[in-house]
Every structure is written in C-alpha cells, then in structure tokens.
Amino acid sequence: MKIENHKIELRTRGFCDIHDLTPEAHRKIETSKVKNGQVTFFVVGSTAGITTVEYEPGLIKDLKVVFEKLAPENGRYYHEDTWHDGNGFSHVRASLLKPSLSVPLVNGEMTLGTWQQVILIDFDNTPRSRQVVLQIMGE
Amino acid sequence: MKIENHKIELRTRGFCDIHDLTPEAHRKIETSKVKNGQVTFFVVGSTAGITTVEYEPGLIKDLKVVFEKLAPENGRYYHEDTWHDGNGFSHVRASLLKPSLSVPLVNGEMTLGTWQQVILIDFDNTPRSRQVVLQIMGE
Amino acid sequence: MKIENHKIELRTRGFCDIHDLTPEAHRKIETSKVKNGQVTFFVVGSTAGITTVEYEPGLIKDLKVVFEKLAPENGRYYHEDTWHDGNGFSHVRASLLKPSLSVPLVNGEMTLGTWQQVILIDFDNTPRSRQVVLQIMGE
Image (cartoon, rainbow over all chains, first blue to last red; front, side, top):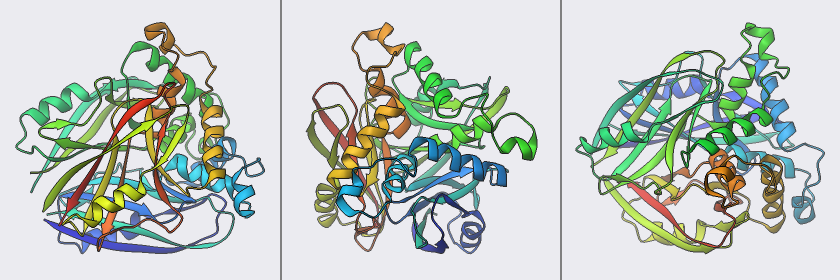
C-alpha cells in the first residue's frame, strides 16, 4: 500500500475560470508506482471546486451560465457584511460544487470516459495562485 | 490491504433515468474479502452522476423536477454549437452532480441509512449502456 | 495500512442547520496513528449533506438562501404523496449536496485552507440525532 501526495499548482483568473487538470494528473500517474487504487483531487480554499466535464469551449461557457443562475455575481450576500470583499457568490458556488473528487485507478489509468476531463473551477473574484492536492493511493 | 475493481453494467433510457445501485453493490460486497474500508462508485462518462436518495417513486419524480429547473432540457446551450447533439442540459447537470461517491464500509456493511440508497442518474438524451466502477478498498 | 472508523454524534435542529465538524475531526486525527492518507466524512441518512465553507455567520445565512432557491420549503413535492411528512425539500437538497466528502491527510493534517471548514448541513424539517462516520485511512 502506497500513498503519494502530489501538488498541481496553477494561476487562475477567477470568475468561473475553468482549468483541465487531466493532462498533469496523467503525467503524475504515469511516473507513479501505484497501478490500482484511487486518485483524489482536492482544491485548497473555499472559493473553488472540482468536477468532471467534456472539456470543450461550449460547455465551459454553459457552466458559467448555470453557476451565475445558481448564485448571481451581483446578488445580495450576507458574507459581504463580514468581510466586504465582494465574493459571496464565489463561496456559495464553491460549497455547492465541493472541493474534492475521487477517481478509481485501474491498471494505471483513471476510469474516466474518453470525453470526460477533471476540471478545477475557480469561482473567486480575483486572480489566485491555486493548489490542488493530487493524492494517489493504492498498490 | 486489498483493492477490488468491480463493474456494474446497466442499460439506461436517459432523461433523468434513475437506477438504484444498492442491491448489486450489496451482492458484490457480500462476496468480497474486504470488511473495512471504502466503497467508491464512479460512473464513466460526462452525462450521468451518482448520489444517494430515499429510493421511492415520489422522490424519483422530484429529482427530475429540480434538475429540469437547474438546467432545462429546452434551454440554450453553447455545447450545441460544438456537437449539435442536443444534450447540453445533460452535461451541465452531470457536472453539477459529479460522477463519484465514496461510502465507508464498516464490518462488511456500507454505512448507509435504512432509507438511503445509492443511485445513478442518467441525464443523457438517448438510451445508453452505462458502466459504473465499484471499487472496494480496505482489509 | 490502517483503517479507523470514528463517529461524530450531534443534535441538529433541521431547516438548513449547519454544524462545523472540523474541531472534532482535528481531535480525532491528533490521536490517530495515521499520518498520511485520507479522511472521509459520511453522514448517515438521506436528508443531510457534507461540504466545506468558510465558517462565518454571513455564509451560514447565504447557504440557507441558495438551498431555499434550489428546492423551496413550501414547494410541491411528490415525496409528500408517499409519506406525508412534509420534508420533500429536505431530501431533494440532500441528494444535490451528497452525503460524503474526502479530504487528503498529509503529515497529520487535513489539506484544508485556513478559512475552509468541513460542515454538516441538516436539511430535515425536525430536530434529529445525527451520526457522521469519520473514517481515517492510511499509514
């Protein structure tokens, strides 16, 4: 049983900025000694989330639309009364999407579909340096 | 430490077609040598998701209603400009719900409530053959 | 490889009652022999969910607002026809949020951000005794 803790570091622009994490995850998995088990993605912080999508330009826009509907950028948020930093919508969206995703690893490959990529969505209202923990656990 | 990778294969009809995965998961867990650890469900593909629900006919309808509200079938999706396959709503819903769920396994049983079942929701707009990876990890 | 199954037991009031699980999780992790691996939170039952948030009074209110928008308390639910217990909204919200969350454990610490706490949201329409399974897996 092995546990490997990797990091994916990236610069994001906020406002539903979407990044495909799959290529870098593949590279780390290729050099890993773990062939069967689980890959867990976890974004550090409370204004971003992780999910999967067919990574193509249309859906990137469609996800922005649905999150704007769920928690509009210009809505009224009580979070504003606490910090006055204008990112209540970012926090609410991130809590709905959640920061982690676990993908089974079978014979050295994540069990993703051909048109299914793992993405980070940064909901914040400012550019950020983001850390995604990529944990490979198994044997 | 053992890792067992199983598959649940099923035929779905799409349009928020909901399937209870719990009975087949129970059967695989019963014959497993793993008694403590984790059971991870992961649906391959970007137009379906996994969650839990009290599996009864009323809630099956209620879930269809809430996903229709979140991402209406007849809405405008930019995904349409890419593929013209009419399933933008399916992708958006699947990204919101996410494809995986991990359930602790304690003394040979998943720690589900009595009225809590693990379900697959197929959001696509056409019948599909679906594969759910069911991974049992532990000892 | 070690697997430890803990329980967090708490009394909730329902109606989007939000509890910070992080302090009790920290205490259990401190006394654990596992230093690297994963911490999985799983709430038993189909009317509650787990996610992360910056735990401050404003966002606690903001989450109530967004879930009321997603599945209003006084909406029409088919679940009512089955049980007549008035908590269709609770079930729908719980299925959207999902009952589990996995957080990587690295050098004895969960990889949470400074302003990122793990929370239980109880969506039911009545006070409950809740059990959250806290599973620590690793070495």
